Image 1: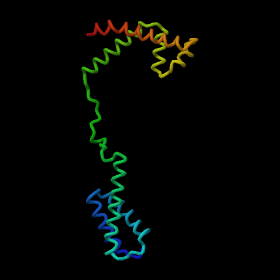
Image 2: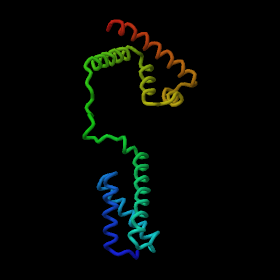
Image 3: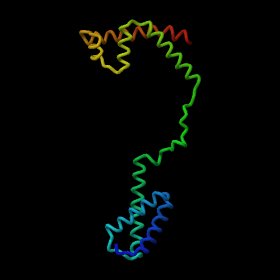
Image 4: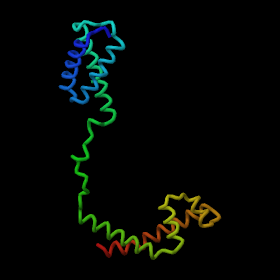
Length: 168
């Protein structure tokens, strides 16, 4: 670049001051550096401060707009610092008691089911599909597994009804 070191130093100060008033000091330093690089690469023939100042401010505005767009895309403008966020779980003792009782009732009902039903429900909870359950249980037909599953769910509901009513 044909511009002297003193001109570039003054220009850099202006750029940093302008950008820092809008985006903060660390980002302003980066924007100033990027702006001076663009001036050097694209506008090397411009050496007058009268021409460089408005040109650099235009480039700075484009760089800041790009920074804001990037920040919005990454969700940085709406993010919350971990130190500022209340990450503790909100304790609800009543809800905890209800959930504990429901788990106890479900386990009681599962204990009353037959072995095959417990196996089917366990495999379903593991994410296995009916075809894989059929293979593991050695059933000849997929429809057989569908019927077993339906019967198991009905048995479970029937066993849970009195337990639910007892807990009320």
